[in-house]
Image (tube, rainbow over all chains, first blue to last red; front, top):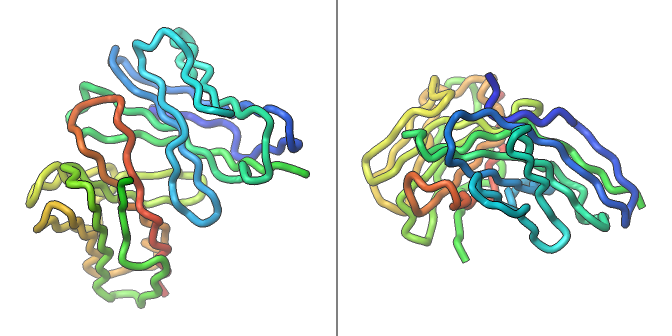
Amino acid sequence: AQKITQTQPGMFVQEKEAVTLDCTYDTSDPSYGLFWYKQPSSGEMIFLIYQGSYDQQNATEGRYSLNFQKARKSANLVISASQLGDSAMYFCAMRELSHTGNQFYFGTGTSLTVIP
Amino acid sequence: DVKVTQSSRYLVKRTGEKVFLECVQDMDHENMFWYRQDPGLGLRLIYFSYDVKMKEKGDIPEGYSVSREKKERFSLILESASTNQTSMYLCASSLFYRVVWETQYFGPGTRLLVL
């Protein structure tokens, strides 16, 4: 089974509007972390936001917030007031404490295009 | 700021060539990772290393090997490049082992084309 599922291959949003990028995850580990990364066309992966499985509140970083619904195993990224520079690929990732491989699991990504 | 550098941004090689991709980090990180990224497949882990001379296979190690002789440097080796290894290769590093809260720090990526 996929550890991280991103069901939206591509999304469009009007400039200055909010957009939600979906992410669901699969784990039986009680301790895990969820991450979102942005990858512009230049290729570098930029860390955006982190949510821990024991965190009581949803994480926020500037215009980014993470809608964490633990029971539904979802960790959607919300970008408010979209800007043209937000056009990029977005990846959801998970890290589990018990996994001896210390690895991250990544989703297949969502390509976001912001329309002027 | 953590800096992860990769030896080439773009690389073109012939089938059968031996290819070296180099990654260097400047923050004394214990862990280093090699991923390949393909459209529709996301990032897939090839190999990782949690110490000098230590390596662990990831999800897709076939056709690749790695070398970590110094803490700051992690090399990915394609022993005999094939066209199906045409891809974007991303190197990453992190400091802590077995924590959930630390992000990985990525290099700029190498786009490899095998003809």
